[in-house]
Image (cartoon, rainbow, N blue to C red; front, side, top):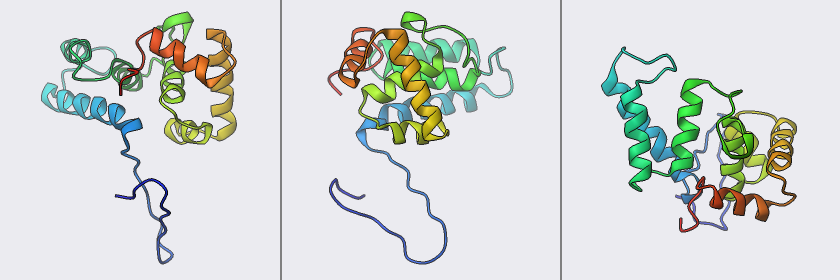
Length: 157
């Protein structure tokens, strides 16, 4: 564990990978882990979107009960179902735009958004701009308020 304010480095020429499991992303990791457990338990019988309907219902029930973050659950389900172009979020946000909004609302920088999406910084910036335009905001603070108001992120976490 590397506490805030410290630097890290590697010695040698071998590539290394750092996995950020800070509190900002722990809700995504928890939702992903829950999905993985359900997918493993479900076996090969999957619904038309890649995950069994009962597992979707169970994940969403865990979110309603407060055991998982609702926005994180929807991001995981969106990634699993590959419904990235479908409109499903508030203000007509696609699942990808909802994912961007959750990341921005939980404090991720544009570079972190790019890394989390597996895209270039320019592509992430375009996603952020389009998301801001759809929800009619011009700042990170306003985007965060929108995400909290629509239950995508929990202001207490």
